[in-house]
Amino acid sequence: MRIFTAVIEKCPDTGFYVGYAPGFTGAHSQAETLDELSRNLEEVIRMLLEDGEPKIEAEFVDTQTVMVA
Image (cartoon, rainbow, N blue to C red; front, top):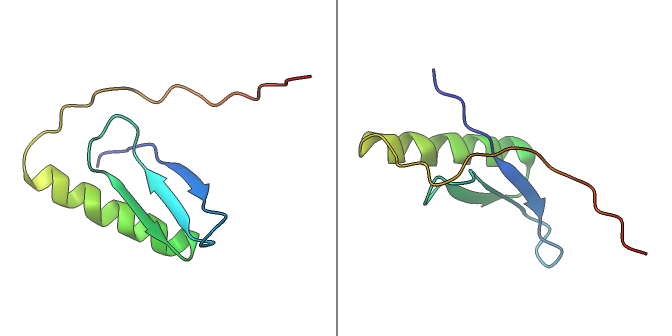
């Protein structure tokens, strides 16, 4: 079993959730619900892995809160 980190945002225009796996080119999707997005991301990552081992261009490290006065 492989584990990939996904970044998830919500589009203010459509209300859809948008997710992508950082550094994994092509691993992105969108959906109306978080459950659907999770399934979509799993499917797209599975399809990308069928083409061989991906070249991960970056590694997810963390999120930070930045305060600006």
